[in-house]
Length: 182
Image (cartoon, rainbow, N blue to C red; front, top):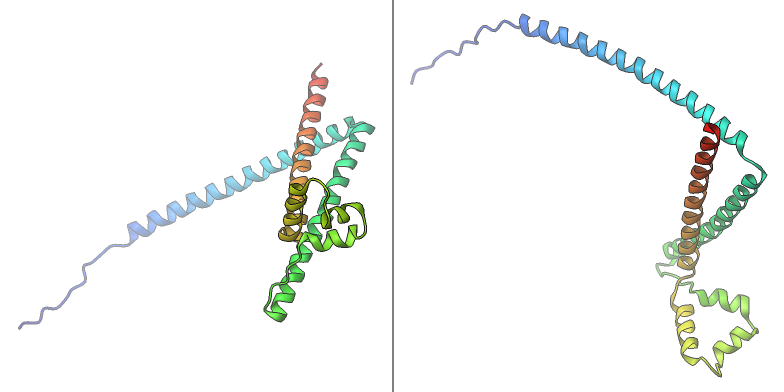
């Protein structure tokens, strides 16, 4: 068995190094130019958004502000119910972590607290008519979690009100722009 020596081929790296340096220089130039352009575009966009906001707010009237306040109040009120539902789930998680047993809180607990001794509570315990409806209501009260009854409707109300408010703002902006052209 003969042993052959390995000879490294002679490679000239200077041309490759020069090509890398030239392209890195071009890449730096492109980067600097892109930063300049993006900063000028963002400054122009922010300036235009500020001008459009001033125009929009200056054209709003008292009725617009009243409706805006009402929609924000509805969203805030629904947010309280959402917070209560999430808080209840958090409380259930803490109890579960302590005991290892999930504590159920059906709607019936709240119903009994709020309507004890009232006509609806008496009808649920001893219905004289609408027995099928009583069974459905009783099943819902016993099986639907209170947290779900708080969270799901509040998310729906918040989403619907946010969409309505956004559409109203866009419509009013369109109206103002249309009036400005005339």
